[in-house]
Image (cartoon, rainbow, N blue to C red; front, side, top):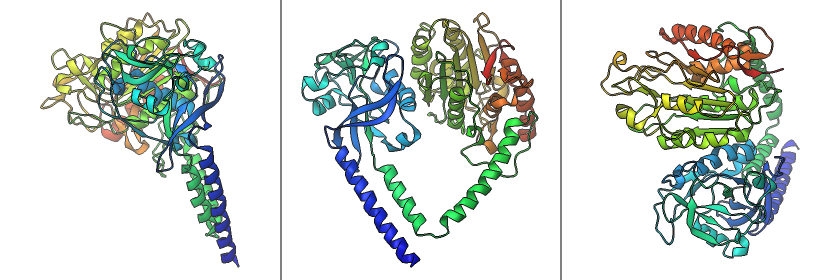
Length: 547
């Protein structure tokens, strides 16, 4: 009888799922409008579901969607320079800030990463570069003509939020992916719907963004069907799984209480935490929001030129992003998150030695914005003068002066920003070695190539700087925690462990003291090496407040 009941239940479930899929298929007919994700819509930033037009159906059950409106205003590129779509500021923003703001984790599972092919400018044959892998993108010239052949279809209204960001009210012009008549220009759609393939300068303000993406609405439904049938066919499934969850949750909670409340160095728990990592469990949420604050979070794991990868760089960067939003009160849309950047990308964000007015400068509200910058990846010294450089993914450490991004330039450009307060956190060593002690500079002695890390800045007291280690020291990994040693304790301190006086106001001085005690201790205990974090700044500044 039980077997018959399960068979009937499976059959009924399959029928229900089939009905749901049929309804989904009907809703996603080409030309229909559907809602997916949420983004600021009103001038005051109130969010609403994003409205999309279905323009193509693919054989795998996914659909190409294009937003019905111009939803924001972003420059195609922060600087007026030769640029292709792959290196553009707009592509970075769409696949980091916009992607993380507009879509929940459930939404993201439905988004299909697209191979974005570059077809170029039909008249000028301007260089376009290689295809890219994007979650979110904008249409090219030929795609615009294919999906919206009439001008009336291409002339769209901006949202009130987009108008508040600078686009024209009424019909607005918006970017296309294709270059203009040169690589310093980008094509656009005019307010009347005409394609302007001569283009405007890539750093032109007031450019609108009409977003496109590929989405499969059936992914989660299929997963749900498989799970439901599996449960129905196993009489003991739920009872066993409940016991398993209780046992697992009990152990994890015990470990978390030790990690997040004890202010002395803790022993490694006997139960190993999963790779999802304890730092992302129960992140403390600040009641004080900082809506004008801007964060730049960079993680460089994968390198070219035979440079070893930085094993936990992306885990560190992702954890920091979550803490900045929740524990420090930053808005999602104000977090610039970049993985494996090139030197060009870093210059687009921070500027260069000649011009500091790049993307970060445009984001800052004078006198209102706090700025938080986090970098994890390799650092390397110039072999002649020992100045310190960050190592972008394509850099050659043997020629780091020419292919790296100068640490001094970063400090100098940040000091020129009209920000209220600036915090810089660098989890990289500048000894020319990896966390395993391997040299990233060929045939060199560690003692000969260690960098001189800047120990002062010209910010007139508004900048606080945390470095993972000193000049000749290596920055260690904490393999057991799936993080670097420094970032692990930096975030553990922000979680409350550094709050020595228990007043729910963690100062830079408290955090520095906590890092000195714990990072130094565990580097010796785990690796028999010295690692002493550096701090330059004011001890009394608040970095996280939980009142």
